[in-house]
Length: 63
Image (tube, rainbow, N blue to C red; front, side, top):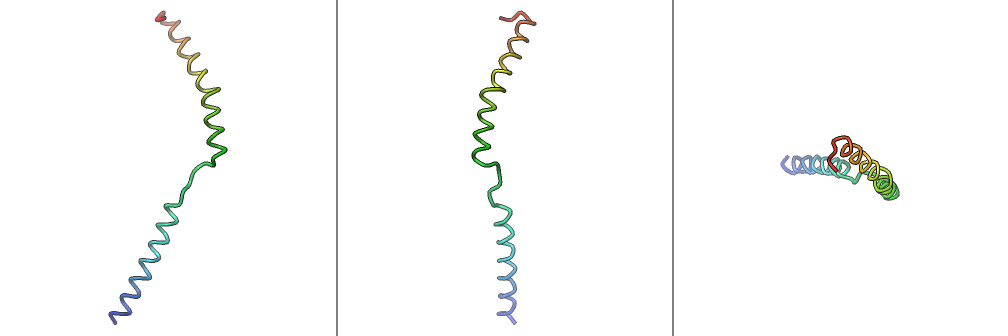
């Protein structure tokens, strides 16, 4: 009886471990997509942000 119970517990633990492994698998964007996001950030979002800061500072006569 005890051996059977131990086997059952072991099987349950193995199943839980497999589910946890599936959950913790790496998910995310691919490397080329990361490079594309960096390029978009540097060449589009950065200058656009600086233009917005310039317009706001001119409007408020800061600089």
